[in-house]
Every structure is written in structure tokens, then in C-alpha cells.
Length: 212
Image 1: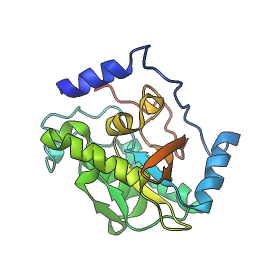
Image 2 (image 1 turned 180 degrees about the vertical axis):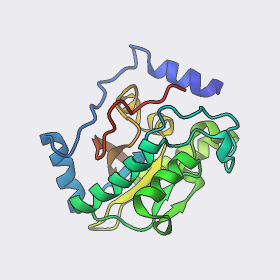
Image 3 (image 1 turned 135 degrees about the vertical axis):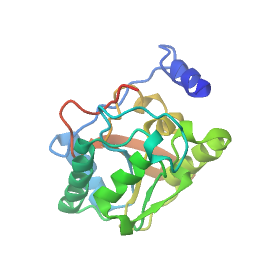
Image 4 (image 1 turned 120 degrees about the vertical axis):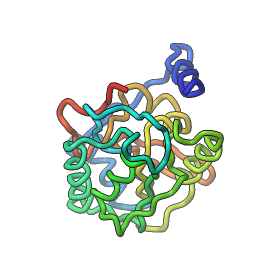
């Protein structure tokens, strides 16, 4: 879409570039600090859908048209399951249900990770190029879900897409900072929010970014 191309070109401008996050695993000191914060609750965990490398690009941009969408790869299915296992093993308290966008790569990631019965699909987490004239509303919904207070001792878990996150959170999560299967760790702050880091719970070798 033209609007998306213009936005990403502007964000890539050296004049606007900021120091980007570097994704980390739970085993690093930086990742361990994020894990400790998540165990205490009160944060938002926004996952980008799982690996799609090698899958056909989107063709229809219609919600509900599985055949016309880029889906998660077989590695992405296993990555999703591993994300669910890792979250359970690390003891992250999560409020129910997990919210996921309706584009199948987000929905399938959430359902493989957490079980279909624990997921609620919402247009609030649509991909930008599936949003059409509702894009401004979709971005406002991302801001709301990132900034609303989370119940005490819990974390809000969301599954969506990279570009709306860049549009809302800024260039620090752009470029190669936010791979497929990664999660933004976000602290709500009244009507605002802060991204604390990017956590990779189930990295896929050679994965992270599709060629579309």
C-alpha cells in the first residue's frame, strides 16, 4: 500500500532514525531483567506472528481469505508452540483471553501457542494493509491496548503485526529490531506506554523476516 511505503521510507530517514532495540533471549542479562519484570506482572507482551519465511506473499488482503494470505510456515507452527511452552515454563502470569488479530498468521500463532479456547480474535490487532479506511482506528486500538493498565499481578498478551507496532511505538522497533516470533515488552503508563525491550522466547535459525 502507498501509505505504508511512504511511512516506512520516512522512518528510514537518517534524520528521524533512533537507536533501535536489539532483540534478546531470556538467557542474557537484558532478557533476564525483562523476564523478572514480566513475572511481577503489570506489563503488555505484544508478539509479532511466528515465522513465515518461504510462504507465498499476501495476494488478496481480505480478512477470512486464508488462501490469499501469507501464512506461518511449518517452522512457525512449531515456534508458536514453543512460545507457549516457554511462557508457561518461565512463569509469566497472563490475563485471559489472549488477543490476536484476524489475519491468519497472527491468529494461527496465538492458537498454536495458547490454545484456540484461550484466544479472542479482534480487529483491534489487524495488519495495516488489511485495515483499509479503518487504519487510524486500528492504530488507536494498538495505543489503547499498549497503554491501558493491566490487572495487578497479570500481563496482557497480544499477537499482531510489525508495521502497526512501528507506526505506534516508533522507529526503535523498526528495521531488524522486531523479528517474527519476537515480543515487545511494554510498560503501560496512564495514557502512554514505554517499550522496555524485545524478547525472543523461541528464535528460529535463519528466520525472523520474510521476503515480501
